[in-house]
Length: 163
Image: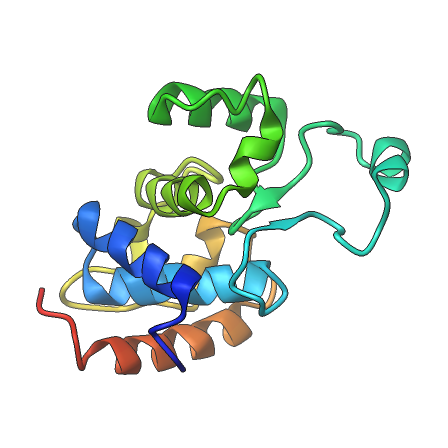
């Protein structure tokens, strides 16, 4: 996997800024890859649908998923605004800005914003439980797929990372 792409590099840099371990960063990258439909770009939930469709079909409209890890629900936008000092609760589209999306993804996964599970629950210096770490974002949905991606990212990061 190419670790020099712009948004991937942005996530790596944010992970380093927040002092994540290499294997934790690998999991952030794997989750981002999966949650962005393999684009590694901030996306809108159901990006192939219209805004009118989202309005009619998403019970949490206008607080639908945006960013690298699909921030959803008003309470999560309020929390992200409070924690990061960026008014996501006033303008949810700010979660699509790549720098903001990277802060949301890394901070949220590190602190357990999304499901109360956090990176330290599954990944530390002694072990990398990439399979169960899926609970950080999306239950166990596609846990094997995301875990396999995390292993690949972790291997790629070994060349440049010193914990």
